[in-house]
Image 1: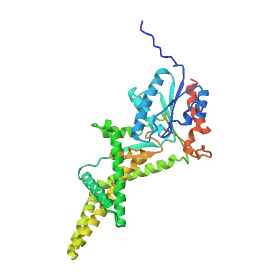
Image 2: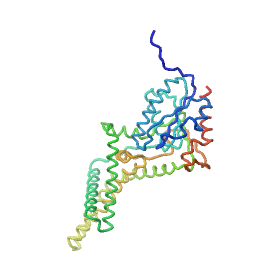
Image 3: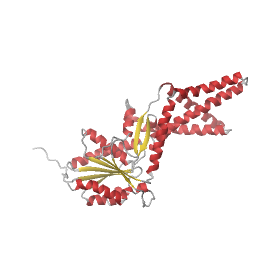
Image 4: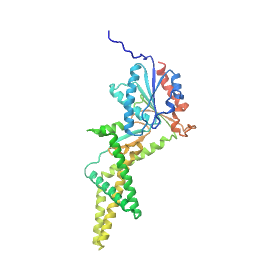
Length: 367
């Protein structure tokens, strides 16, 4: 006879729940055993566990957390093979939970016994973008000219408002380049062939199914501001991509300064006037173009420190729901908040929310 396993057989549990905190909330009180939600779930017959991750605001941190949650859920599935498993996640923890459930589903051949309840989650969407060829060359050229000119002006000392604008613009762009370098360092182990598609896949929320994903939101949640900002910068990023790949844009950008030089020569103005026209006529649209590029890269800053790096290959936005057909529960505006004064940080303590979650998990808890 083979050796008998020493793992305790606890498969009699019908409902197992994992609580996942959000960004910068590793020790979130609502995930503790004495919280209102945990207490209510245990009284309903569920086993409640917690999953802690770094809580850092970056694509890399959320991706690493999703893999850690996969391992946690695998252990729970092995210990409770006949139970119904739930993940209740708050804020960006919802993105972590969706990716974990998707990876687990893929590893199990499409089968899943895990349902995700996402509380006030800004679901991340990512669309691939690629700028190559001569547009990329000119972008790099103008970027080098901007940073170089700003550096020289800063060393020599700004003497006009235009000089100050040049230094500030160059400094902002240099900071974005530095963030891109930080993002590349964070993802250095993944920079192999196919890294673009892997990065986009790690950011983009998996397609939801109505029986596997429940989204609960409250009107007036502070996260609504992040959603609005994320949607705006996503639109701005997509618009900038269309602009930078437009032949008309580059024709005007390069042609107008040359036309200014020709006009100055025909009208008899001096060489100094022609040079000024060339410099200002070429620099002004050039700086506008670089500002657009900076907006493209900087638009992803709201998604984490490695957001600008991801913004080089993807247009990102934050949406109220994941792709697919999730079950959406929209609550009325909140009348009470936590001591912190944030509605976003009280959703998991709301009696209406707890009641809805109990009504959803109770059938499996009593089966």
